[in-house]
Length: 298
Ligand SMILES: Cc1cc2nc3c(=O)[nH]c(=O)nc-3n(C[C@H](O)[C@H](O)[C@H](O)COP(=O)(O)OP(=O)(O)OC[C@H]3O[C@@H](n4cnc5c(N)ncnc54)[C@H](O)[C@@H]3O)c2cc1C
Image (tube, rainbow, N blue to C red; front, side):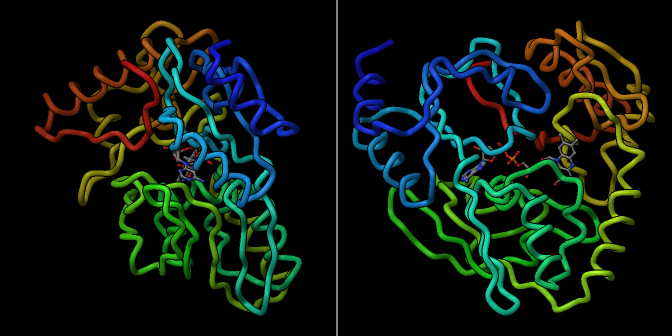
């Protein structure tokens, strides 16, 4: 291992780490090479300390939540993965729920229900951390997480700030955090009082509505919907359902999903993405934009 990584492990002695870190084992699509080191801070303060140390040493890093919207190069990533899975405390006060960035949405939804707080059932079934969800403004047509956010604690260019929702530039599949170096530490949501039984019924119907989505290993939707259009419908009309590149296939159930049928590489997925873009462009002149985030060199 390079000396600089050994020094980091010593500096954060006692903090769990993985060396090397496998993206294949830590992403929902199950693809990608390795990073030399991943660190697993235990709370928001320690996460900030890790990021501060990496910045001071000039070491590149990437923050990883559940890895459900990332495509990582087969060559992996040369810097450090800061994994948020242990930064996951969730608490409520009145109708405000505060979650550290690595809390899974299923935990956030469970705590909300237990405390009689509703209004976020549209997040049911999205396999995300709340930090990743806020970073991406995750959601579905009936709601996006940005609409429920009161404020976020964030490191922007290494500086700690609390940003009100209006300063986060939440828009369709877009946030301010994509534009500048941002590490989301925690998220505050404004929820609504509701009876746990009513919340449970909402969760059940939200989950049922998702039962038609493809079951295989994926990153969810690959492309954003162009204004007034559905990327999935455009891809279906362009005949992409079932198309393959190596181990990667466009799902039969939903043409905006790419499935790892087993042994797919990120080169396979990148090749399929190009074909999907070209098919829609040559049919309609519309250029699809990727929703997924790429990590490493392609
Ligand atoms: C089966 C399936 C269904 C899906 N359905 C939906 C859906 O209905 N709606 C939807 O919007 N999305 C959906 N997705 C996509 C995905 O779940 C979301 O984009 C989610 O918000 C990503 O969260 P994550 O924790 O997995 O982030 P990751 O994939 O780990 O990271 C995504 C990006 O966020 C950054 N990031 C993560 N955490 C932080 C942090 N704390 N601070 C700064 N940056 C951070 C990463 O660096 C990366 O750029 C689906 C994915 C799958 C696999």
